[in-house]
Amino acid sequence: MKDLLGKKFKCNYCKDIHKVEIEDIRYGNLDEFCKILDRNTNYKKLLILCDNITWEVAGKKIKENIKNNISIPLILKPKNEKRVTANYFYIEEIKKNIEKIDIILTVGSGTITDMGKFVGDKYKIPVISFPTAPSMNGYTSPVCAYIKDGVKITIPVKPCKYVYIDENIICNAPIELIKSGFADSLAKSFANADWKISSIITGEKFCTLPFEVVSSAEKKYINKGSLILKRDKKVIKNLMDGLNLGGISMIIAGSSSPASGGEHLISHFLDMYACQRNIEPFSYHGLQVGTGIFLSALIYENIKKISCDEISKKLNKIKIDYDEKLNELIYLFPSSEKKLKEIFENKIKITKKLREKLPEKWSEIKNSVCNMVYSSSKIKNYFKKVSCPLHLKEICDNKSLINKAIKLSRFIRERIVIFDIADEIGLLNELTEEYLKM
Image (cartoon, rainbow, N blue to C red):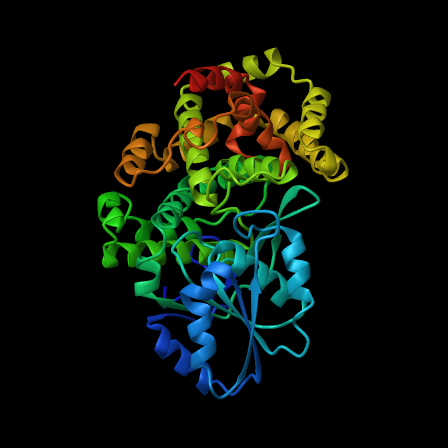
């Protein structure tokens, strides 16, 4: 990781020039971090961004220990929900509190970090991240995910300039957040596979480096779930490294593609449903993603059995009523009608290209992509060791919603994912029926 930070280099894989703008990722304790902040003479006014929970975990102590500069805490408190979520109205609150701010310090996990990056990017204010849990890869990623007008949106932003990690704090984070980070990290192979399929169909740029960067770290924790549950410091540090490299892989790619594929759409779909009905999220982001990973694994291992001759026949046989799909989406998310129609229209254009190119590209996809991912049995084994939810029914008791999440989530993002292929050849309906009986 140190070899990538702050570097600009020519890639051995894609031959493009990559630049990793993060200057430092450092482990230490909170007291050391505060001394580093105090020695920094590049700013005079610091905004400590946290929520009511992370203020008690670390924000308050950081505020107390900073002596040489002005530090202003902004403690976000839940509005009609149990915990602060990535909703745009919190971003609006942050915007009102950044006058004359020189630097933003995010103290928290995914939600706080992403919102800090959003505002930092908009107002050209550098951001420092102080993670409170190894729960996701956003500490180093160049994207921000949030809900606006009922739609889960992911946009490019400038990544954090520095990431400072207190091992004691991340190892003592709520165990569900640690498990969430573990599950989120395993999206890597599926997201890269989806990205490669998209590149084969659309011609978009694909680079192998993001996949290789994360794979090296993943080996150090993927089969050590029992040690994660015991809060083993070495394994959790390795997990944190894997997550941070996951964020860096997105910087290298220039998008979220190597870390977020079809499996993430399941989570986004559930978040949108919860938001529009003013109910609590079904689970933490990574745990929701984990259920999408298992679904993706099932699809990949079934889809690779299909021959080139069968693909054409299945495409010709299956006719999807896209208008019906759009109407279902709007019925579920009525306040997002305008945005969903825009996304849907672009998705259908890409889908037409998918249907046109798939027969001639199927052999390449089977040979170069399907073996990139883990089997469903391996995912089951990895998740079992760390007690992560595997099936959607473990986090959602609404069978009808599970059915719709599987069949409709592909339409909430303008990107080709494995769910698209499965649906267009009729496999998704078959698998969903089997899945619901599990």
